[in-house]
Amino acid sequence: MWKRFDTMKPERRVIPIAPQGVDSDLEACSSAEPFALMVLGDSMEPEFIEGEIILIEPEGLATDGSFVLAQLDGEWIFRQLAKQGSGWRLQALNPAYPHADIAGLDAVKGVIIQKSKPGSRKATKRYVE
Figure (cartoon, rainbow, N blue to C red):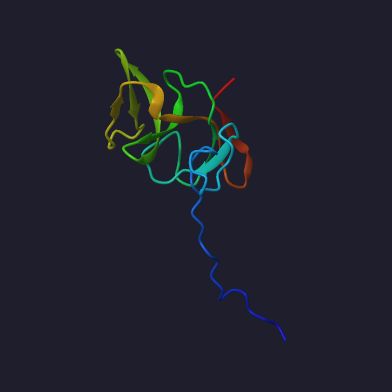
């Protein structure tokens, strides 16, 4: 007799984005290990399309024009870093989304080093040399 597995729903897990040692109750990657996330939404279009996978280097060098993962007001955001006078700006590529001015780079938690489309090795783009 065959048992049907298609009616079983997989349990959803929340994977925290936090360097190891920040909260001993969280299971997290070491702060030095790159990790991947899926792009959600259209705030970074046309360069990053929803569903693409981005690779983040937590200890990457954030410079003017870098694409970064940042924590702002308790939320994680994916934006482009831009130098603004003596401070910095986190800006979306889609003009429909607001920018956020930041005094320093403390909000930046990682630099995007690569993107790829799921299922396509040829559709990979690197952002660091």
